[in-house]
Length: 286
Ligand code: NI
Image (cartoon, rainbow, N blue to C red; front, side):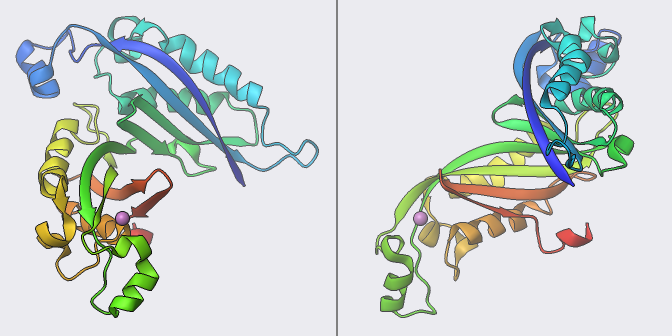
């Protein structure tokens, strides 16, 4: 089986407000930013399909056919719309990335040609946050209640790669410039992914403000503009390599995500050319 992902974009407006509900109820659902005033996003939508390579053509599916289906089923329905007013599906449910995916998945899944199954949909309202659904081919869209949500953060920090288990010469040999005595810095980009059921009332896996508050308090405020070897107790007795940073962040966050959501993955980009991912040691049993 092979997977193919196609990207399309559309623009749409929405309000964090349900007109049938009272102002008080809207504030409970949307928090302090509840408002009937619309605002918009340039959405980036990635549609993943899976199946077998056709031995006659050498392809999985005609990409033009995927484009036509996504255009007819999704883009025509959503592009340039004020979603709360113009799309019946959103008359009485919050316009969130998760609820948009629940709108998109069944529409594309039933329109796909035989032999091809929908395996993933990723929707990015902003480059710093997105929601992802993954199906289990060939059951495809049996479960659209469980999704992943990713938020992106940044922190700048210094470190020195130097192991107490090696001699000074061995450290120099292994780590090179990264072993310079007074350290060096990186602008780290951190992606935190949580997974869980979409809450029926909020239309979200997790309140984005809650996730941001947790990650900012636990990670960004502790690590940003610090020297990880000297200023951050999390790294005492450890080499603060990107690998260790990634694992330490996962372990620090994993018990702090409010249930039923749970931490799924931490990804750390140390430079434009390398990144590190960790899903915990028990991920195979999840
Ligand atoms: Ni470094």
